[in-house]
Length: 488
Image (cartoon, rainbow, N blue to C red; front, top):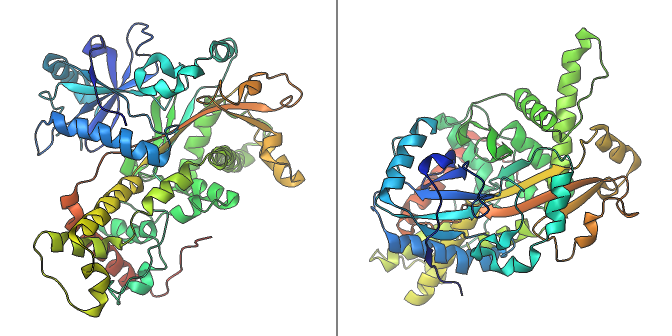
């Protein structure tokens, strides 16, 4: 078991750190100061003001939760808790002032918590540089992975820029039926996934302009083709489910992720241009006819998006992260309807003696608390994000995918996937680009991890219950014929 210690590390001046992004609770910054091996490849995460005020013990508890609960469940090769460090109030006050104009207007009303004089140094999963994780003690389990030959290989080759895809996959499953569940809504709840139903409420509230075609059940299905299509659907409707970084800088996202609302074609063309300008994909310059140029660009955009979805799906197929996340999400065994009942019962609420509640009433208080604790862990897994960063050693011709489809070739016949975190363990031979096994292939170096693993508040359970019922009731009232989400 890992216990949190607070370290004293010189992180330089506030102006060395530039705004990278933020969520509801934290702001993340990139190091942009003088060369510093202790800071290169890391980000600084600082806390925003909260209603509960500054609470060091709570921060330590969050660190221990990620280290000792989520890391074993999701796999320590995917979870990087970071290093907790001391900072000064003066540093935070100056930093708060420096980054203010770079923050989204809707988020900038909540400032940094300058009284909480701790922060976190965490691996920058949007980049591939400095893959010598033993530079920082929180990756002590990878100490034997300090492979200088790999770093030299990267430095002497003209690699593309690094593209990072951040995916917030959401709920991976449909709930099981229980006697205590609302019978009037059960047919919808057992056949339509939470994400797809929630789209109707978001549309009504005006937070989105168009329903997304993305369904999490496709991404979690394990089926290669469904996974590719789910990523394409996310690109068409990013909302807050997809962000794309180029060399660590946020370059593409949807309206709910801080970007603007765009149509599918514009999203495809924007991301296609980013891939071309980053030297991930070669630009097609075959057409000289101006009348055909626009159509060619649209066709090329869709081919490039398909190529990106193929790369990302191929990486996900090599890893266990999606199944790991789903397994933790399935800690939600009682559904929010059962959990809300148990929560109210433990807090002095009325007991329902109807036969349908027998399953819940027979639980002891200790057993009920365990069910609620497992549910809260599942809530963290339902809201986490997957970060996949990659680059290529030479730009890819987008006709590669057409050739694969036409000739039934395997993607692995064209691409050589190398997990940079695993270098030094079982993928050493993949470094030899000229080997007979890998000759003629494009090397794709990648790194993958999971972020957004903060604990969820138990007192939010009644709010979760209300949202659940509102989502399902609205969906049922809007849709005459339910088209079930496909499980397998």
